[in-house]
Image (cartoon, rainbow, N blue to C red):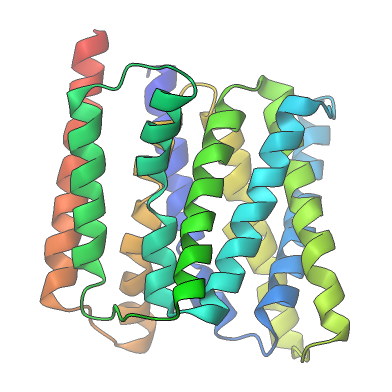
Length: 280
């Protein structure tokens, strides 16, 4: 199997694990900032153990420091957006990241954007809007702006992480998680935080399986998967969120959700196939 195909599988696996956040978070009686902080703390421990197991060096330089900063910005902005606007608005606007990757790559990195890239990005964005059309609402303007900021930060994270080397990428993920923990944990002293023993278990699971392992996979995939490909495949996450809700809570998505999901899956699959054929 080609390295690029392995990277695709790593990104799909990461997206599937990311999508479990809602299941665990609903079981934790706490404010979202503390959840984010503890989740990233446990994730950082997971990433650190992986670095040691693979005998990688912990490197801090300008390149991966930027990746870490954008990773922290994504987590923090998304958490704030969920407080200021609807959850549907927050996740839809965060997943505008493929659009920003195309814009940033064209304007600042002077990369040539192919027609297939533009079509895939447009179809994906339309699919996301349809997917959440049943639950979208106007929301607060500030929350929507912050959610777009999360999308920009996510795009920059993919771009900077993709330009880093192997050890640099894993270090960037480690420092990003530690920085997010440093931002989120102080809220424990100012906002309600009273998780039960089961809640603590879910926090550990969130840190290891929903954040730690997925971003280890992202760090590995980024070397063989373009920022745009990583971002497009990452759209699997919002697709699966309502699936888990349907399975565990019995809440079925509406007709528009199925149509949007179909558009996204078809457009991303065709884009990957066309990219493979063009390079071949």
